[in-house]
Image: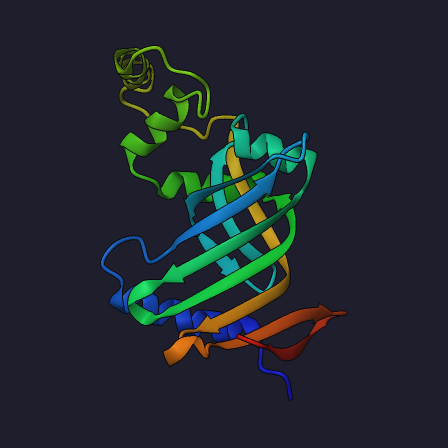
Length: 192
């Protein structure tokens, strides 16, 4: 019987949370833009379940433009201290406004204000320009809750495959690959 890769992910993720000093939920997000140019960057996992893996960003950012052009992505979790990594590949779709609103409301007020002040991924002439915009947002939303900007929200990567990699001596690594098969999963091994 094939193991549930989401349950295995949850187990490894819990171990990373207990042992990693910083950003146990950091993952590399790789996309391809409209011209076929690949790009990778670190983002933070903010939710996961059987539907997929969720992160949030400015929907005017470079990564959002790439996802609009090619709604597929790869994720990579690398926990060096545990000598493990997980690779995920799949289709990407925006999360609902309700999910985005709920997560945005859980963020710190400075992070909320920063989402309004930042033109993420666009050129910035001077740090003082951003700081002035941030101050404008502080004044704009003084004495009130900060609503989610319309240009900010989440994306869900629905995995088509998930690979669990465990380091072994002499580069004789263990690699387990789960591939989506209808509503279930097919499991296999890969050579190191």
